[in-house]
Length: 218
DNA sequence: AATCCGAACAACCGCCGCGAC
DNA sequence: TGTCGCGGCGGTTGTTCGGAT
Image 1 (tube, rainbow, N blue to C red):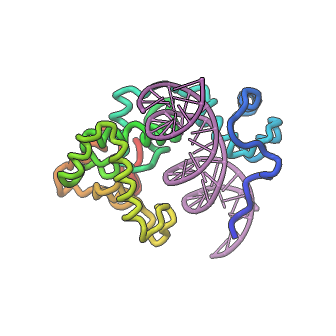
Image 2: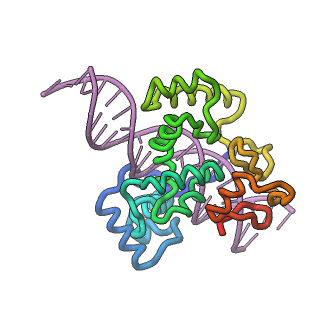
Image 3: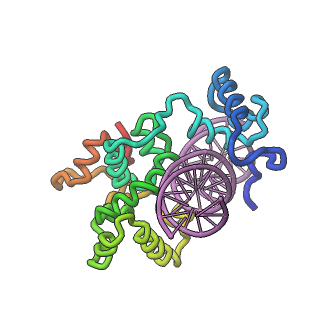
């Protein structure tokens, strides 16, 4: 069976954090710093599991969080990074000061996906949506909600033969690629024989480089 | 005024990578 | 070399809120 749970679930709170819990967590981390999440709740006097504390701190309580609306520049940067990295939210977040992976993930799913669809761009592949039917669908529905539903249906159809959890396809090689961009990010650096592709230029612009065969930030 | 519905986002769950032993 | 535990990640769910009917 699976591994044991990260904490004694019977004696932990779940759901929304109270003001007092937040204050306790912040006060503890101010004194002791981050880390040792497993032992933190007991030490801080919190009836929470360590994971929950970590998440709350990372996504909400950290003092360097920006919060508030995303700027147009941030939008475009997220789109560029996503086209290169796919759903690697933590990597994308690492490039946006004061933003968390969870925040960017939520923002992507609620705003940017719709924005790209309204531009006639497939948010999964960053390519123009295929076929006249899809385009007219966008025009007919500015909000894109129906299109998203349609896209979801297609996705579920496509994935019906395979597990939707990409990480569970364990026979995949130990590398990952940007969706439909032919970017084999875990293998050898791009050949110099070819001229710089659009992706190469984008990597350059975003400060990405290959190191030990892996795509990393400079 | 009540209800419905979708958007937004906080939080949880399950899995994986990696270091320690 | 294999196992275990922790931290981290990405997907998903739950809750809240505001606008439409």
